[in-house]
Image (cartoon, rainbow over all chains, first blue to last red; front, side, top):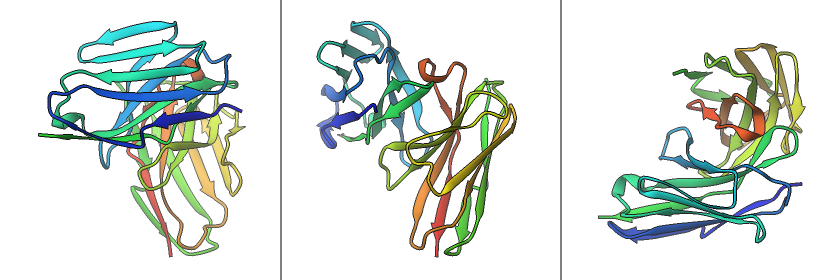
Length: 110
Length: 113
């Protein structure tokens, strides 16, 4: 059964700094990896996803995937107060489903 | 674009009561999901459905039933609400199951007295 773990549990970063979030997964057969962001009181919303090893950049957001080490990460450049949210990573599991981590709570201080 | 609607927004029940939550989507997505989120934590999958009349158990299905009678709607029933239970139930839909972006509804917040 897929296990997805996130670190750290929470993070405070100054405005303008880099935010780095980590996720490990247990199922080496996983092929799809994603990050979701959930602002307080709102629905989770997909940020980025990746299928292949390496990195993918979209604006201030970069996702890295290393399947051999069962690890992927999200980096947010020039962090803004509006980036303060709960970040959830997810990896696909057998049977058409995603398994989510418990989340990293990020606070960006002006 | 589409939208996912969940009703009710807030649900207050009594211990032992049977409670039903409803979800509608107009994305024309095949797959729909029910998740439970406790205290701003991660999402735990309760039930999902890959097509009309299909039901698949998630990791947290005990104590819940689900129903997918139409492609656009997916219902979740709490069979016997537990005292002091408080959680947000999120409905989501996607095109192709485990490899596609999931779109979430705003949630139903459950409180059991």
